Image 1 (cartoon, rainbow, N blue to C red):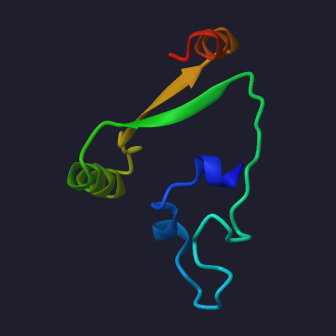
Image 2 (image 1 turned 30 degrees about the vertical axis):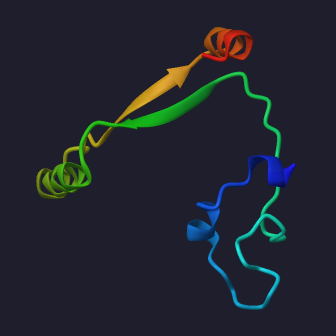
Image 3 (image 1 turned 120 degrees about the vertical axis):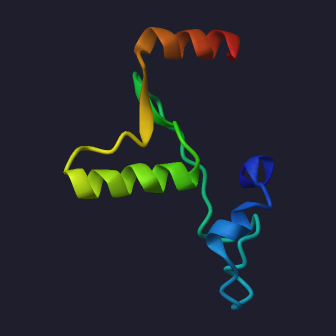
Amino acid sequence: MVRKYYSPGLKAWLGDLGDGKHDGGPEDPRICIIKVNSKTAQYAVSRRTAVGGFAEFAKGVVTGETPQVNKLRHLDEAELNEWRKTGR
């Protein structure tokens, strides 16, 4: 199953340890598949570029206010079920 979902981009995250086994490839034992059944989900949508996000963060440090770097998106159970049915 790892081979089915594997992407060469994973090597950038895992790297090659140089031991012939932990190479970031699809046979790397650090890679596995997990299945998650969720009722709700929440994720962040970036509002700014990396530079804009850093500027907002710095402003928060100076003013003591919470920086508005990302917008949180919450999906409830009905939305997740709709996505499961339609794939959208």
